[in-house]
Length: 610
Image (cartoon, rainbow, N blue to C red; front, side):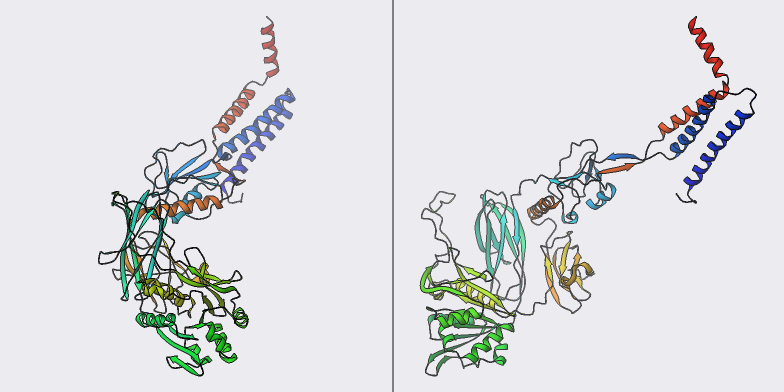
């Protein structure tokens, strides 16, 4: 309490009045001709003190300590009537419907500032939106609603090259049975898959020309009615063709069809076959030195050609991998001990490989195929069964190898290991060309495209990064921004982004899209990254599932016990102290009016005896 505070001067005046009253009583008692009983004087002094304290407490009542109950948070899908216990506080977030007796708040942070000490938080409805998905300091109770019928997860494709296949993956909710289909911009269904409740799916398609395109993903129920749909944005970039050198120890059908596929795909692939005796077939020989290898993105090398290389070319290949080039090793037969040691030195320690084993890329179909809905017999698959291929029985030892391709039984067909700035991979399939001979060049291209893109030299990834699916009115994070970045909307307006200093090297900024459609991120280096903003009502089950999962995660990471200080203070009531003041003043008045209290008491006793 400072000297300039009104409370200080109020206390000073009240204290002074009490002291003056006590001094007056003492002086009066000493000068009185008839001495009053000491108990009467002590009573008057005590009433003076009580009156002063009562006046002070009536003007400044002490706060009341209130123990706070649960903070009940109503979100989207909450019931209109919510039962509460004494001490509970019911709030409603903007996305919730009408809730009787709830206090409307713009967000959960505002509610926690108004009611800072809840014992716990209970979330009703579908869950907290990204706006409120921050760690909470008290226990969180959330009874998750059932998953929606529609899409509960969706992975949109990354930018792809012309002619390459892109994949759209996802998961459905509680829809008992149905189909999911991918429709191209021309309205043609390019891929479809049957789904049941909780099942994941993957659809594939390709775009042959560079640019931006919108595919349509539709989820239908068993009757064919559309349950949900969402646009699938695809960006096709005309990238610089990878520069590949294939070194083989003998001419085979595998190298023949690999060369043909590369030419059809626009890949700059040079093939050099050494058949011994100084005779080489294919493209002109390429010297294996630092200058030529630095100009390559990938070298594909079989075991026979490796055995024919000298120490100088092997050292040059190793140095090129350390500098970022990719090296794909292709065993065609049993490996010699020297080759195993050399490849182990590159990071691929191998076991097995003495025999060739059959493999199947697709799982075998059941003999009793399910009948169609009309009961007209077994359903026929759109694609023919893939042929059996052969692989070398090789296993990469160690846990640092990354699996790239597997067969239907989960056996690793291709894997890679990081070395320096590059990667060393191994491809154990010996006759993948059989896919082309049996009418499945698409699968052949998919596998070799995955090998080239994953193991080859990494390109200059200068694109910005978009966190999740952009949606109108929902905050998204735009990362890997350099300099002053802006977002250009479809209407031509530029929205300036502010990079969060706490994001560190990721250089992220928050953005709230206002319009659906294609928009462009442009940073300070004039790099442009297009991205698509979904309408606010697109695939609502995705939003419901995401909010449900995030709220469950918050409840799982919140404290299990209430905070020790689960009480709050409210202004106290002055009524009791005013009553106390009135009683004290009445007592003072009565004792002052009736000075001969002893005679009065004796008179009352006499009357009672009669």
